[in-house]
Image (cartoon, rainbow, N blue to C red; front, top):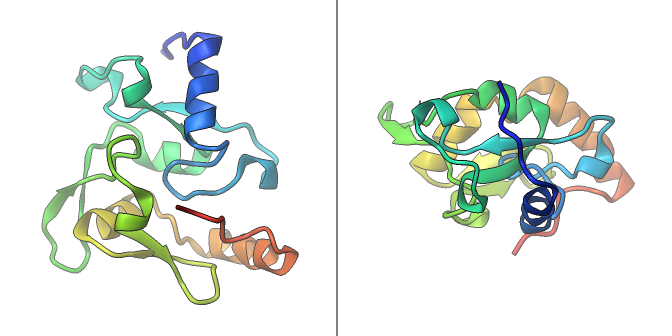
Length: 142
């Protein structure tokens, strides 16, 4: 069951993440789907419906994340926390491949999140190739 999120709070979340997925940074305007408001700490684990626990997520990242809060870093095989898009900075944990089609994990959290959310699936990297050719990707990040 989804939680009611007031329209004002939805706007704040959208503004905070610039209408992009907080995890893979895909711009909602490049897709044919509506992005979802995701509880970073799942409600089932006590997460509240407050700005600091909400992010905008593409349906793919949201589905793969589901109720997860941890992942395995494929390099060290250690259990790590998933990236927290409200309290952590994306560019501290992730970067883009030279051709802009793959997300590169810079930290154990980044690598674990990429693996758990399957952020570099072949279908996604293929569509990113088209966005790169269109000059729409990778996004400009600070």
